[in-house]
Image 1: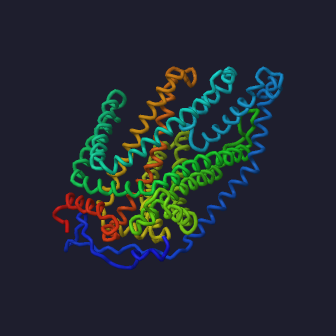
Image 2: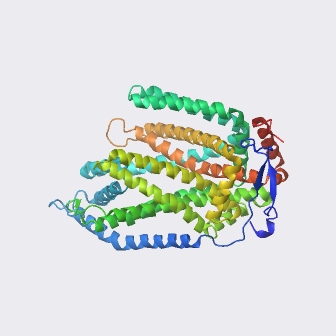
Image 3: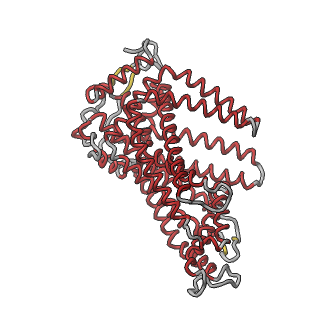
Length: 542
């Protein structure tokens, strides 16, 4: 948004009624957010982020060639045991040498990843790679599992995009019904978990009973406020649908995350390989990976991942803020506001994004390190488990706080610290109204994502069955097709609906700041919002 078109952003104070936190006179004083002049905020953290990327590039350039050369040479010598030369064109396996060398490289990558992320996450893939590495027949199969995998992922991605796009229209027209379904689904899911746990673990059954009662009580408490939450969800979805070009930003961020993960592995794994004195021929390392190096690499991974994710959040907030105040600039598929907001996210607000993301990245890295220590079984597992739980809770709180802070960054251009002060003001004034509205909307988005995942999973299962696709020889391996379809559909749908999630936060902030502008620019949605408010709190409605 240019300053010339920001007449709604000015210093003023308005009185709004918030039934969730009534004051003695029935009113709350709210200070509107003020649009900030364009300037680079939190510059030091943006520079630090770019320096860390340069460091990762240096690691990949220095260490990757050494590791890949050693592993490829050992594979070419048949594992260093006098076996056949895998690169010899006269070998019967010559057409598949590249696959075997790649498999051994991947085994090392997964092995190093186990040291970083923990064995429980990477062990299944490691076992699979070892099996393929030892089974020459794998490379002589007439059917290429990798091609089938790409085909199923493509099918599920297309189906997920179509269904999730249609789901936006459904959420606009039937937001209230979907919130009700989400609340009921939570109760039923907890009940099914409890019944299943009865045959496995008494403790799990007790936790399941607690979940059933908690979800039922939560539904009872918020039932009267569903109408207002539904209006927020419908408004947020309308803003996203009016600027559906945001989907390109979301899906490009997904591609960026995959690309970053691949690049990070190319940098991190060779770094650990060389610094730990690993020997590809012996299949072992002289020493344990340096904890400080592992911690630094983890921060790098999570920091960049968070930056990519939060850039989308800030971009959506900027677009929805423009839609709220100046709808003529944000009411088409590829509206001007999308490019402007995305550019601001990568320039003026980038340092703020890096600062908020770094806080979460450090805590996420501590969680991973703690989990690794606990899984190593060196003692103190109880204390490590408690520490992991505390850190996870702290991470969730900060991530939730960041979501609102980045909303203020995107809408008004605040620095991260200034945005945090506005978040504190928001929760002091509007308290549980904000949390309940956000929670109900998130329940719907989760339900839609799971539903689309199930549809794509079943689609891939049927497709693989009719085309005789079998992944491996293990019992029930055909179920992998369902898992591939479900995961791809879930990820694709969650990516698109993350736009709605960010939009919900922005609508809550903007409605607190500027209900008058909303009434002028979007009268139908404003009337629905007021009606929802009157239904939720009829005694306090003014």
